Amino acid sequence: MVTRLSNFFLRTLREDPSDAEVTSHRLLVRAGYIRRAAPGIFTWLPLGLRVKARIEAIIREEMSRAGAFEVHFPALLPRDPYEASGRWTSYGEGIFRLQDRKGADYLLAPTHEEMFTLLVKDLYSSYKDLPLAIYQIQDKYRDEARPRAGLLRGREFTMKDAYSFDYTDEGLEKSYQAQRDAYERIFQRLGLEYAIVAADNGLMGGARSEEFLHPTPVGEDTFVRSAAGYAANVEAFVTVAPEPRSIEGLPAPVIFDSPDTPTIETLVRHAATVLDGEVTAADTLKNVVLALTHLDGTRELVVVGIPGDRDVDDKRAEVAFAPAAVEPATPEDFARHPLLVKGYIGPWSEEGAILGEESATGIRYFLDPRVVEGTSWITGANIDQKHVHSLVAGRDFAGDGFVEVANVRAGDPAPDGSGPVELARGMEIGHVFQLGRYFAETLGLKVLDENGKQVTVTMGSYGIGVTRILAILAELNNDDKGLIWPASVAPFDVQVVATGRDALAFELAERVAAQLEDSGRDVLYDDRPKVSPGVKFADAELVGVPKIVIVGRGAAEGQVELWDRRTGEREVVPAEEVVARLAV
Image (cartoon, rainbow, N blue to C red; front, top):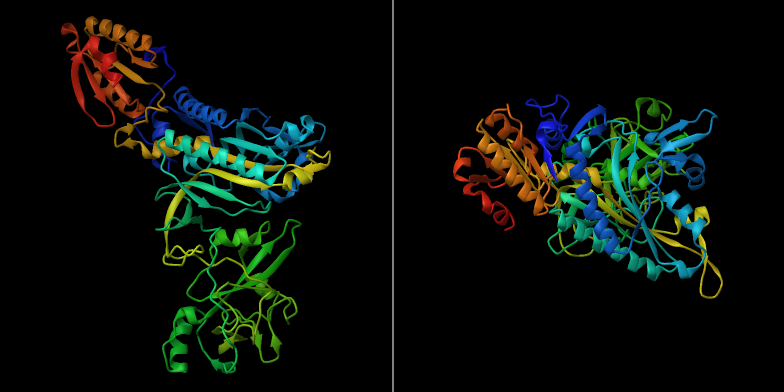
């Protein structure tokens, strides 16, 4: 149909909104697609809803092609299912909780695994009902501490979440691959570059987890990839540990004075003089004290030993110690543990172990995978102004386990042997995940197999951020004048602009718009009679419909101008040829 701009609900802005941090936020507000309602919460206007609907249509088509059926759950959910799964607590402060007038607890859904599981449990009981794939496109709610970047990181957002249900692991593999293939088709149709990277499986385990990341310098995620095809986000990267070395014949540890050397840099300079040779940060063992806040509110200190040329990566630490919250230890934490000499912490003393569950402090001690048996280190002696050298792992100290918390660097070897990795930035646009039997076991989803025996169903989870994708497309498709939408998601297929005051121009524009409508196109017609051509062109550039037909000075001769918003090319053509020319 033809939408007339003279009565369309649209107001464009000439100035950027003061709170806009990224291009998509700035242009979507200025062009009249969204309006801020509260931090991280937006009102959707007609233009924005049209683009969102077209993205959703592509997703629905590919979900149907993959054999999935659409359902729709409420956003307001009762506490009980999330209490049963443990996530009422484990989400911490990240969700919105509320009570009704009778005091019953509810939450605004951050995700719907529990509800999908219980729905299938309620309706299905036999292996003959499986495999099954169902999905929804629904709003989600997360209590982001610092919502930012417009739609890219909000408190309310739209997701497509799909779930597969099988009773065998082989069935799950097939369902997973079908969804993975559908995701590739979706992103290809949207014109989005993507990298498929191995991701952390999280608390629920599962055999396989992959993220679809759109490579972009403004992405919030760092991922690694090798030239031979390995790819993983940093949380899932597995360090290639060196082979253990022989301890036999290694010199005994030696404590040495090291005044004013609380940092790795100062320690390296001083140790080189003590040892009369070259010392690098990689020769030192940095012991970082972290505070874990567990789900029950208890606070625990742990120490991680990593090579001194590395730092703790916050995201890797969050994954390593999940579901506990992780932060650096505070001065108050150190005050409660006087055996930890800040700046000179180490795992060993001449009297015995300083770190570890069975040590003098009782503080759990974790090691980087590179700290293997037989490696020798320079580290703190747990005495103020003193360090120790020739401290050998496996002989003089040991950890309570290994953790992947050290930062990943370009040049690190890929764990699959495919060579060194490079680092890149990306933004998550989709996630496919083999949940396995966590939710089914927790919530009692079982079916009878071929032998009449009850078996626990195995599940897959597949998510796409709809509103995030819309923002990414806006980030990618713009110039200094405004948005330039890809044809697959543009709010209209073509915009007709009538300019000047000549009635002939408006009459011809009416006929062209009607012909385009008859050809099956969605048409936005700027029929505003008292608006200058300059304002109309500025609005057209801002709104971003990719094909524009200008009807003005050549109307008396039946001539119009075709304007390709993306290339900037303009061409005068006979009005009767417009439909055919736009079909090319």
